[in-house]
Image (cartoon, rainbow, N blue to C red; front, side, top):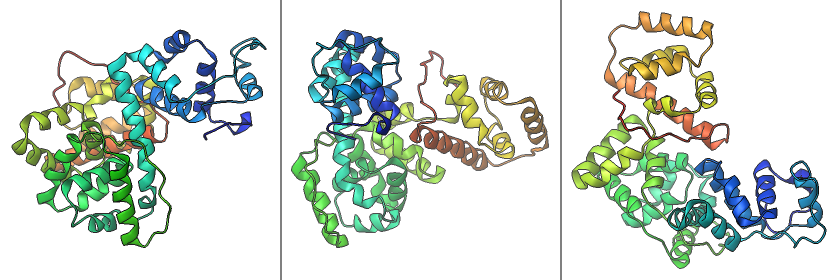
Length: 343
């Protein structure tokens, strides 16, 4: 929702949070924002940018449960890019503020490629077959990670490393470049959609990590190995940011429980084969006693299994985590540890 909302009931929870912050002094709003995860802060900041100016009646209804009343002489609440950028600067500092605003710009620019979201990923891969690696990377950076990973899987293995490298090292792209690529693809598909003027697009390591985390184990291993031989330092940076099965030990208990709720005990037993003790302990502490009994039985009945089977089971759980995050049911916020987990 953008512009001027006029109906409180039509607002999402994130938009309401954004409205409350817009009523505060920047220093107060900054203190509140510090308590959000980076994912949550991104969502709220995006809504502040979109809302810009809000009807007083709507703002008063939204904040009535937080404030006793809004002074009738208060200035009309405003959002917009400047307010969002200033709020981020006060909360996270100038460097992180720039990262978040660039990521938001990239997300908004990605709307130029929304017409591809209904297209089969294999068709998109074919559509990009003759394009330069930099062009493919630009498109992938603006697709949803689950779609981008499927498209990447359809790219010739010999080209994947080039595409991944381009994506990880990509800088801002001009609106004209984004528009040109989108127009060419629309023309090839016969789409007659008037392109909107996108904001600057940004690639980088994080979008690549998001894509790899949603890829199959085979694509992940092949790409990381190839990337390592091409640029070892870049490959290590990508690996260090990737979500792994072992990262469950760093999640909030409620999020661990939500993830495990949808995992079959047989699959979970396979994923735990050879896992570190703290990983197994974290999982068993966050499931019901009955589920724990079933899991123990499954683990005892497991004979020798191939490493690839364990890797695939763990990858399934990582994909489940990413899906729950995308749906807003959990918020991935890992706590850094000095000691590296060994799984």
